Image (cartoon, rainbow, N blue to C red; front, side, top):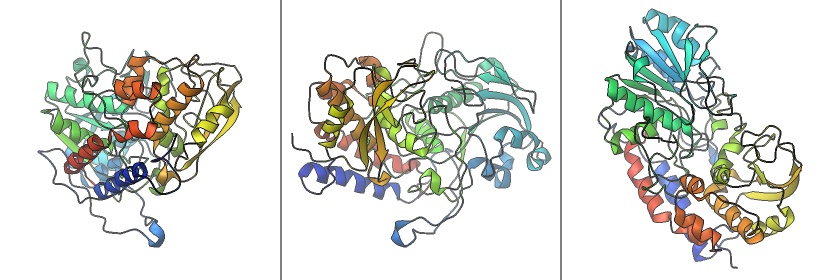
Length: 458
């Protein structure tokens, strides 16, 4: 089979198509700030500094939304009773907790901020839990109960807990992929704010895998469910809106997208970061990396997460319970050398593969617990060239080609993550992974074009 778009060497129509997407992403990612739409957010602070010679970004430490709130936007919460949705990722550039800052920072105290309620998403307020039905906890410093928003799936802040609240503040770290449940928490908080007539303030944070890349399957509109979660509407918290797998937006921009596209009446304000630009990776920001979940130890795992997250709905381990989750995949039946050869024949950009053996220890997904199994490690060589959605498509194609009798895929769960049934069916039928992904390009480019109006950063 002739390989094209994913090749390391230049040439071929498919490669040019993949290159065109990358160029379009970069151009759109560096577009000028759009005007803030209908109360959807404040304009980001100016940062005119350009790249250094050789393409490196200038070193200007990013200040997250919580820092900007305390220094120049404290009026948004002055004298207010605040409900805060956050977890361990809600910290400032010095690593100080947003909970502690709103409760005890002199600027918040002087402004009469009253922290009255705490909520936490999946994985709990400390980010260490890896199971459903999380109980409420208690914050030791403030004495407040931390109400869990993760039961069987993600839930909204209950109306009963918002009756004495003046403003709902959200400070959570996204990882740049459509399937992240913290995004669902933001949407549900906005819907809860609309129901109760409470303003919602989103404190923005970086997209760790840059805001200059958009790719992967658009979630089928028939699968997207942005409705407010209720007893009769069992939402999942991650298949919310028809957007690409790698969306290229920040959490604040996602909130603005939902506000505009879902016609929400929420009184939304996004407090932007200072000094962040779309081309930045998380390690360019000089902010502390705090694991957003137990299985997200690094930016490398975040970058490869879009490739492997669909395999949560298969009998393939994605490395949960190992030291490199979402950087390897394995199964007891895997012929790792054979699958590596199939993947290497695709000459994929930015990555290499190598067989190894792993033993998942108490994996959250329960796959192959305590068993030594063959696996394949994905090594990132040039992260700017990695296209995780293409990588995920190639892995499914290779596993099906090598192990048609052993691979088991749960269609509904897989499609919710990869995006639609057509992609899965085509890859399982042996279609060229490049061609399958290339068919998504017009829709991805259209999404990028439309997203410019909710961008907060260059």
